[in-house]
Image (cartoon, rainbow, N blue to C red; front, side, top):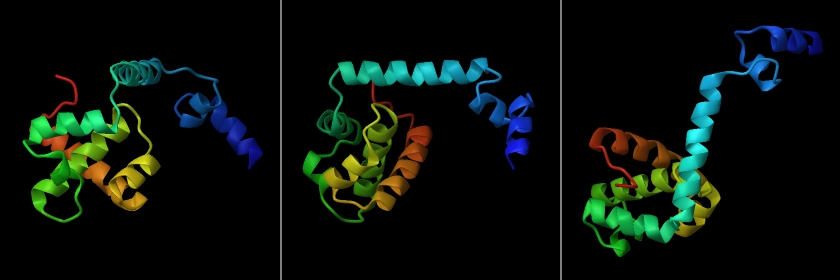
Length: 129
């Protein structure tokens, strides 16, 4: 098995060559750098869970209590999903922290992140203007 891994590490078209550091891919570096710069910018502007909730309230025209209360009302679920997506993907707030803050299971947060991504793409919502 080790021989196969070593071989894959030398093969230029496998992910193993990148993971082992044998071959560098320019597109991977640029994507990672952009993501880290954005996270750094958001953190420097003080984007935490509370600030994201405030931004979400202005975008969705809801009150913070409506976003954070439990229930399966469609608009509230969409708002929570967008909150989970923005918080997990933009400033990089951990899903465990989101789970505790929103009183959801980790699975629920993970599903909300997926739903939130679709909502963002279909409606063009952005955390930063």
